[in-house]
Image (cartoon, rainbow, N blue to C red; front, side, top):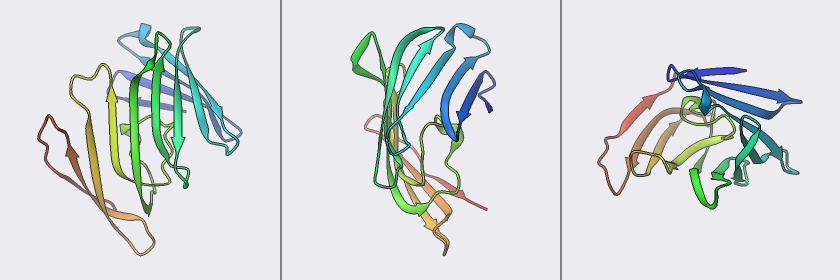
Length: 168
């Protein structure tokens, strides 16, 4: 499977027996940035860890945590050079509503979301801005699926406006 985004990036996904086993990320303008992720699973068939490679050299790893509904609650990426420091982090809390499709363009496909994120946080050491948490409120239909959503970003360092989405 291939996913293209932001004009320069291509992700390649390899699945075996219904499991994501590998992902490669390429930047068309900077081929030297290519990274490959190799996934490992826990006894509940969830991704527990990913090893990160640049060419054939292991450069880091990712650890995953889940809630009781198997939604990804944290995804923390570490560099082997600085294993005590989190290089990139995603954190989520969830509603009880069903999620027909997560926002694929906003996050890696190794993040599983059965329910809708009530809050989403992302930060990386190389970000040009301070971390922001997005709080989401939903209106659901009679089957538990979202029909609208209001996102309210919050940060101690910036002011944001709300964004309203309507799902069809």
